[in-house]
Length: 209
Image: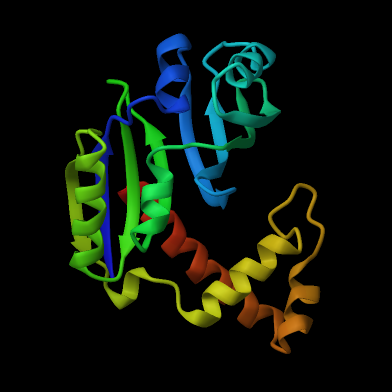
């Protein structure tokens, strides 16, 4: 598996429009197909003093955006969903057999996508699509993931279940003992699996920044 960081400047994308209008920072946490040629993005916004309702109203006025849901997590951070019927960039990622790990806005107005692909051919296919769309793509970084850097199947299954059952919520919706019962293992074993899995996720996050 190959992890790559690609910098690009998507023409006409809602993210580019938002960055030109407001001093905000954007992270794309997840992307799913929407309709025939659109996507729905789960996003996190660092508002830098901007009013969340003003930002929401601006997004709703952008062509091709069909739905915007934004909710404040704290005074200067919001999370939400943007559904767009025609969206450049992420749709190309989805069709190029690459997996989006994260995306974030940069100070120069460009975007950085961190992606994982199974082979170089998938990455070359994506870069060709971005070039054809005049997005000025640049390969910032590329490395082959070692087994030590990837979650094992068991780690992924347990961390995902912990997330879905609200273990990481505040207050917690489920504790270690109840999670351990689901997998028929001891609380001590489950805690160690969670700790190792979380460490890999955190390492991957900070290395990509």
